[in-house]
Amino acid sequence: MAKSKICHALEERSPACDVCGYASSKLGDLKNHMLTHTTEKPYRCDMCEYRCTSSCHLTIHMRIHTGEKPYACDRCEYRCSTSHMLKLHMRTHTGEKPCKCGICEYRREAIQCDICKYKCASSSKLNSHMRTHTEEKPYRCDLCEYRSAKSGNLRIHRRTHTGEKPHVNLKKHMRTHTEEKP
Image (cartoon, rainbow, N blue to C red; front, top):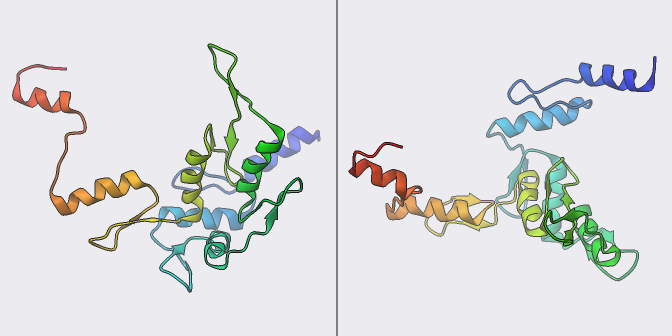
């Protein structure tokens, strides 16, 4: 059997998530993925309230407390706690810029997550995305126990305390006062 046919046959037999269809050739990866559909977070940090669904996320999180930076640049003294941060840093040496503007010659590098297939154009978006893997929630409500991975979610949450109900789509809301139909 040709190599491509073997790979295709293996992909067809890979176990898949019943909820979203995520598939992996490794049963352990699928088991960890399934936890994302529940509220179960069996891994707990001994130094703070952080909880997560996988041991690798806990290992990465613990580096916040220990200051461990196991990833080192081979071109300068830079050290960091995650492989994706080292990958971003290496671009300062290589000058890679694969994203190209469709109008001019401007180029910028697409940044891909090391854990999944997510790609974006800025390191701040990737850092925000990485919290979906590490389950880090640095934004904390000062009035209750709510925590969020994104500042915008905290801003929305705070409205539950103030009673503020801003209209996300003011134009749509204004139609409730008129007979105008969309």
